[in-house]
Amino acid sequence: MLSKPLFAHLTSNHFVRMNLARFLPPELTATKRVVIESQSDQPWDHFYFLLDKTYQDAYAELVLKDLKRWSWEAVSIQYTIDGGSRGIPKSLFTLSNLSCLALENLGLVGEIPCEIGLMSGVVELSFSDNLLSGVIPEEIGNLSKLIRLDLGCNMLIGCIPQSIGLLVELRQLYLHNNQLDSLIPETMGNLLNLQDVFLFNNRLEGRIPKKLARLTNLCSFHADNNQLGGPIPKELAALPHLFECDLRNNAGLYCLEQFPALRW
Image: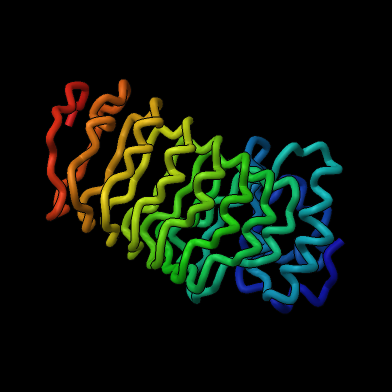
């Protein structure tokens, strides 16, 4: 049961959680300001994100962690916030059952916390379309089960971390529309399951690594509008499934090989 003092700190009247009603005090559910919806297939919880940080930590510890004892194999959270800006709640990273976290288009600010490395079980992670700044933490490499990573459309700076090469299960990598600079890391050639790579609209420089030729499952590679230079590796042209490759608007980049399988 949620304590009555929490009611005074709520900033919205919209809660979504399967069977969340059992946690709400009668004083809260009796008001017309509360809307409770049942989502049996994807239990999303808006309630947690509408609390002050003081209560977020307690709610994550007392409620969200208990979900695994209700035979929920995973918790998938997606939320929206009306008005105000805030950072990524660090208490999210303590939820051991979390497999999918999508916090998109929320006006989130600040840096991606290094505590993100604690989410060892997460499979899909998206912070796209926010106002996040700073660098991508090296701890991102701890997410060994990650299949989809989307940090696109933010204000991230610095290099793509070398630890990205530890995400051996990764299939989709979206880092577009940021301010990333430096080189495309050679370690990206370790991601043998990679299918889609979006790096466009950054400030990446240097040559495209030849080790990307190891990505035999690669279908689309978009690195247009950067500062890449040198020849496009002929090995890239030989990838059997590559049918989308956009390298426009890289002034120093030139092509010596044909890409026979490309659609565009």
